[in-house]
Length: 441
Image 1 (tube, rainbow, N blue to C red):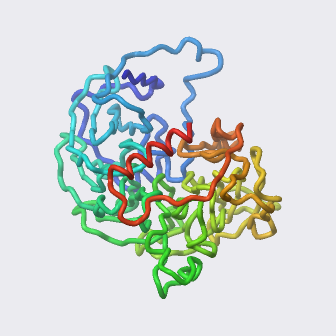
Image 2: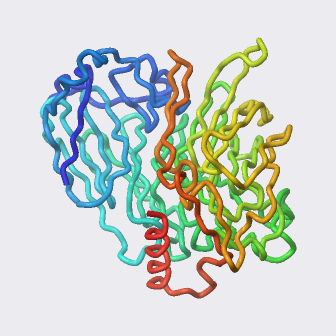
Image 3: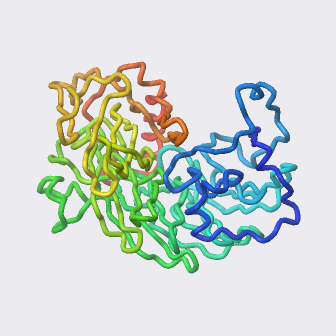
């Protein structure tokens, strides 16, 4: 598999003999001032994925040619966004490989490889979506649920912390987010009966700093939304796409996944908090500041893990701090990111499950659209209106851009079924995941 990296010239100055890497928190906070670098997975804390570089134009884009080609170490799909720091490109490869590349020549400067447990029953394949950098260290989450710190100058491992036991159904694929002196990481496993969470670790030592459970336990606010049984213990609600951060408010914003079982909500009556939501978490304490749930009691597998973009704009003539998200349920939402207040929402592609949103943004459900034994035709398709590919926002044009899934052009037949009964073998879990992937194609 060949990976073509086509980079504007500003990225490609000499990396051999480059000064020691140093990316403190304040440098990441001011990342827009360095358009020749890419210091976090989305380019900045607001998640914009927008570059102010101007070398490429409609007039010269047709003349763009590869300067070099880097051959990946392992075959398979890539979902990664490289980091670019002072002429060095840092790439994470599946399953647990990190490479530093000279941006001028394509020459690998160093390579880190970590072994992977062979019995991880995760969904859907051992992809790795990227890295975080802080100071002179890189951070990567592994498919078998470790957080690893690597020296950015040498590729040597500094520490390796176990986040959780992957044998319980967990996996990790998201890029970490470096915030102040902490590394924030999410987990996967919503189809395998896990209980989701968001974690933070000390960047220097790897010591655990805080955990926010995305499924509240007995006695916590929101647990009643799972009914009176123990559905919350295996409720899913993964955090498998990297969130965003507002330094002024000191809030981390993270999208959450679907409840489990995906299509059968009989055992989990209620809204199932905090599934299919965005949560605003205090970066120092891990405490929930507010949440907003897009799809209460989801029975369509409509994760809300899509990146919550942070935008400052005027609403009714007054400046507001906003959060915008194109959701898998086919609606586009704008919230106040200080309070979580719903401001507006509208369908951006075909949907047949809701008669719009009410004044609080809650969907007005249409009848007979939940899965049943005979099957129900529903738009958007099986994979939702959007998925993990990140959106972008241009401060220059004010446009929000995303990539709707091809499956939105097809309706899906939803049948009431469960996922991963208790005691399922790992082999059966992997087979179930493979079947689910086939249906999603």
